[in-house]
Amino acid sequence: MMPSSPPEEDQGVPMSVRIRERVKAARHRFHSNDNIADFIRPGELEVLLDEVTEKMQGVLDSMVIDTENDHNTGETARRVAKMYLKEVFAGRYVKGPGVTEFPNAEHLNELMIVGPITVRSACSHHFCPVIGRIWIGVMPNEHTNVIGLSKYARMAEWIMGRPQIQEEAVVQLADLIQEKTQPDGMAIVMEATHYCMGWRGVKDMNSKMINSVMRGVFLKDSNLRREFLSLIPR
Image 1 (cartoon, rainbow, N blue to C red):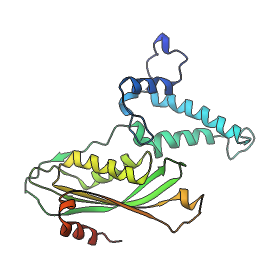
Image 2 (tube, rainbow, N blue to C red; image 1 turned 180 degrees about the vertical axis):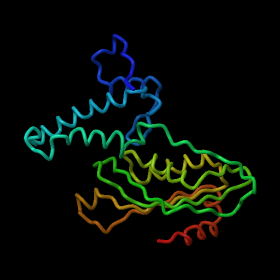
Image 3 (cartoon, rainbow, N blue to C red; image 1 turned 30 degrees about the vertical axis):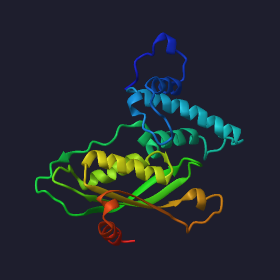
Image 4 (cartoon, helix red, strand yellow; image 1 turned 45 degrees about the vertical axis):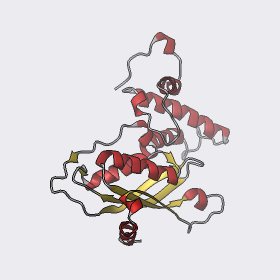
């Protein structure tokens, strides 16, 4: 679906500028790990894809790569643009996954753990891959919304599908799950390999980063926290 013709004053204005101005007018943040889907109209992502393709071609030209005669890189600019906008960073440009919520009819109040969920992201410093696993612990109460197990993975994929740093990504995911389920407590542990360390820099492929977020009863009850951590098969 193509967007309707832009107003006359927008003629010739790059799509990225139009979207950015909408975001600014709404006083909304647009950091690398923010979602801006509310400011993109139907069909505009395709126009943005064309713009990013053109800019990416400029990067390849500046790197002195002969994309006109090199059979390996002739379509690289388009492939990279599509990868960023529609795959690895899609969490910036599309609305969050639908999460069907059910009442806690049986008054479940025991620890639930989901994981490991494989997640893929990219560091916002170098755009190098971040590949890892996440475990989510939820302590429900009688008012907690119950959601399907696959929805935890969908939410994690949406949050991680942006340029991230691991510490902020886990907090964003915790905020989202807290909003959707309203539990008495929630815990998240993430373990990941960062290719900005393994592919460049110190080139150490054996190092991993592990961090956690604990909320509610997981902060107050050391026994519950210990139980959650002991049940994670690492």
